[in-house]
Amino acid sequence: MAGKRGLDDDDREVVGLPPNWVDILCQGKTAETLARLIAGIASQGNITVEQIKKAKDEIPSFSAANWPYVSKRFGLNESIAALLLQLPYHAPPQRRLPPSLHRTVFKNAWHALDVFQEKNFQRREAAGVRVLDTYMVPALGYYHGRVVNTAEESMAATEYTSGGQVENEIRMTGASMMKVAELKRDATKDDYLAQLFLEMHSAAHMNETLGLPMQRVYGLLCDMENFMFFSYNPTQKQFSFDEHILVDKKKDYALPEMIAVTNKIFSIIFDAFFERVRALCSTPVAKRVTPRYQPQIWRNAFELLKQSRAKFEEKATTVPEIEVKSTEALELLRRAVTCIPRYNTTTSKLDSPTPVLLEQLATNCVDKWHRDNL
Image (cartoon, rainbow, N blue to C red; front, top):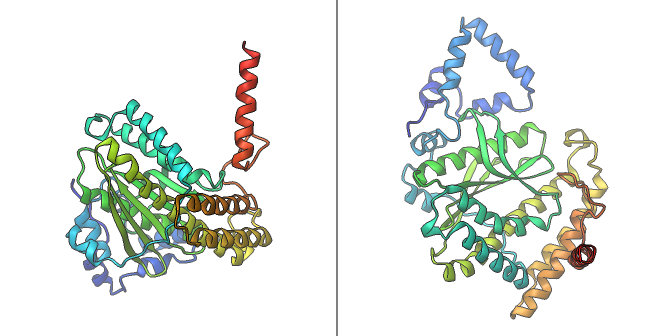
C-alpha cells in the first residue's frame, strides 16, 4: 500500500517552525478563522486553488496510510516489535463482569460461531465483525444508551490525515472514547496499526475542537485471534501500549479465553466513562456540547461512579463473591448513568431498567404474545 506524502520534517525546517506548530496555530480557533487565515496565506504567496487541492490530496486517508508514513510523522519506531517494547505502558484497572454474564455470552457466541463459522473457516470479513458484536454489546449495554458504538462514522482531517470513515467508534456525549479496527484478510498488521493510530489521533483532535476536556482515546486492533490494545494521550501527545491478548482458533478454547477480552473492553470503557464524567463535573458551561449539561447531574453521576469503582475493586476470592460484588458494582453504574442524558434516543418508557425489571418485562411480553396467539 503506497503512502501519500504529508507535512514532514523537511517542510517544517524550511519555514523554521517547531514540530507542533500546526497544533499551536489551530488551538482555540474556529474553522472559519482558520479558513480566512489559509486564504490570506494563499493570497500572499500566490498559491492557486489547484495547488492547495493537490497538497491536500497528498495527505493520506485512514485507509490509505501505511506504517512507515505514520511512524515518521509521530517519531515512532518503524519496527512494530521494537515499538511494542518502547511505547509507554498504560492499562486501566481490571473490572470483572459477573460470571453469569459471561455464561450467557459464552452460549450466544457458541451459536454465533455456528451461524457465521469459526475463525478457520470464515470466508467473509463481515462474519468476524458480527461475532465481535457478541462481546461488544454486553460490555456497552450497561451504559443504557449513554455510550454507543457508531459504525462508518466520518472523521475530520488533521495535519497527518485527510480523514475518512471509521468502522467502529465508541462514543459518549459527542466525544470519542475508543476506536476498533478489524484486520482484513489481505492486510498487513503494520498498515492497520497505522490506520488505528491516525484514528486515535484524529479522535483526540476532534474532541478538542468540540471544546471537550483533552482525554485519552483508546484503540483496539483485532482479528478475533489477536487483540492488541493501545491508547493516545493528547495532553502528552503520546501513544501507549496496553497488552496483546491471543485467543485460540479452536472453539472450545477460544470462548473461555474471550472472557479476558470482554472484561478488558468493559474496563477500558468504564475508565474512559469515569474520566469523562469527572471532567464534565468541572467543565465551564460555555464549553459543554449542549445546554443539557447541568453541573449537578454530572456530580451526582460521578459520586455513584466512585462507589461503583470502589465496589469493583473489592477483593473477591470465590466465584460467588465475584458474582455478588460485580453485580452490586453494575447496579451503582446503572444508577450513575441514569443521572445523565442519553447519547441516543429511545422510544421506550423504560430508560434504564434493572436486570430484574427487564426480565419481568421480557417474561410478560413473551407470555402475552403466546396467549394472544394460541
